[in-house]
Image (cartoon, rainbow, N blue to C red; front, side):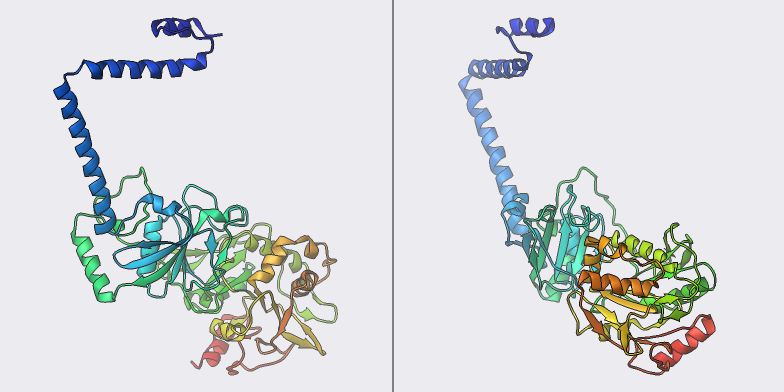
Length: 468
């Protein structure tokens, strides 16, 4: 039943209410009726003047929209909902929009908190960029429980080849792909930028798809923040080390200072039980360890292939299982072609690793040690394709339920790959170590040399390897 206040208002409106939900309809009807009476009471001349004014306003709004689309390179926001393959244009480049499409791998760089406009502008400023993947704002997109594509994430891509349609998979419909079709000559583009910057129109209006925001834009020019130097060489390799407190810290810090070892890969991580800064990046900001307090601080031991364990540190296997779990939860690894684990005392040359891995693709891992005629993973440097680690992430129980207690971590990963049905690649020139196959540091065909545990010996080998 309606309340007393509702019934009273209903009587004032001249109706009887059985349901209080009818009140909003009654209010609307009453308002329309009052407006109609007011309009009919107006003189005819005033009515005509009001209609002419309203028509003029509508025509002015339509003209402004057309001018914005044709003269300024802007497109209506509805262009985004026209389906796959919509062609967009800016003053510098033309773009083809594909909703729900992704490019496997070939990631150049990741920017966060971008708009579609600023994402494409970053690509236009880099001649190597051919496409961008953009996570639609306001929605949680991507795989790995939303870890990879967060709203506003912008991935610059060096190619548009290998495009896949994931629009039918939950989440992927919220990821847009914009492929750079063609760009004007550099001198015209530069002239456009000068003209745009001198006008009162913001440079961000050159692109068609800026979304409405309630955040006011700054009225004064802002300085572009420093972005740390990124290595873009292909195939892309993500490298990591597990660092224990002690002598390894000074070794890793010296590698960062010289941008060597894992720090010469496309991206890197140092996982440690120690939460600490390792040094500065190219922008002068601290580079921190990936802190994992669950890791054990167990010293590295001597490999005993006859039992598949390190004689004094087989408990490291659990440490590395935790490290892999940490990596697989991160969005940082999935846009690379290969994932490489290196011991801190391995003299790693990332450019040679890329040469070794360039001929290979698809799910695979590297057997890099010939021990008494048996091909094995040697833990100083381990290389896995991203699809191989993705298979591990999808079915971790196949590996963790193995009787791994008593195995070395390298044997665990080899048995894991075998259980998952991942094919192997044999490369006996990946690592030089006397326990598998000795190689001098001057050998130009070897990608890593091991072990060099003190800083002086490490850099002496590195200098011989690179000819310094």
